[in-house]
Image 1 (tube, rainbow, N blue to C red):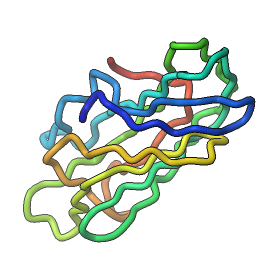
Image 2: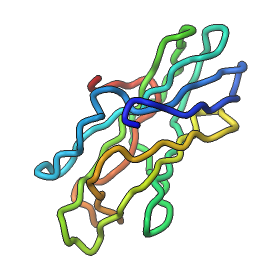
Image 3: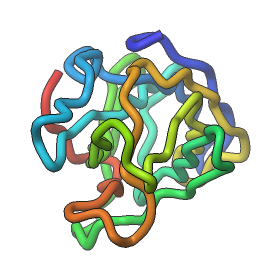
Image 4: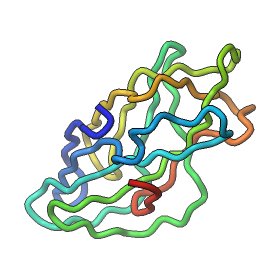
Length: 151
C-alpha cells in the first residue's frame, strides 16, 4: 500500500484528506545510510480549497508498542491546497541494522492531519525496522505539512 491511503475526515474549514505515502517513498529505506526521507502525502478530497497549518500526528505501531514521532524545528507556515491537489510532510527515518537491540519493527502507521478529528491507518510498506529511542545517531522525526522532498 505504498501509494494508497486511508481517508481522514474533519479539521478546520471542513478539510477532507486522503492520506498515503508519496510515490518516491515507495522505495525501501536505505539501511546503508544513517538516515533516509519518505514523504506523507495529503490529498484534498473536499469540495473546495483548504488551508492547513502544522504537523500531522504520526504514530508508528509495531511489536514493541507505539512510537509517537517527534517534530523538527522547521518553521510552520499555512498552506492552501486546492481541491484535488496534494501537500506533503517529510518523515526522516533512521533504518536499523539487523540484530540491533534498539530496533523498532513497524507494522502500521497512524496519521492524523493537522486539525483533523480522525486518523488514517497506513500499512508500513517496507521490510526495514527503525532505530528506536534517543540513542539513534540521526533520529526518526517529521517536518510540518507543506514541505516536500521526493516524489
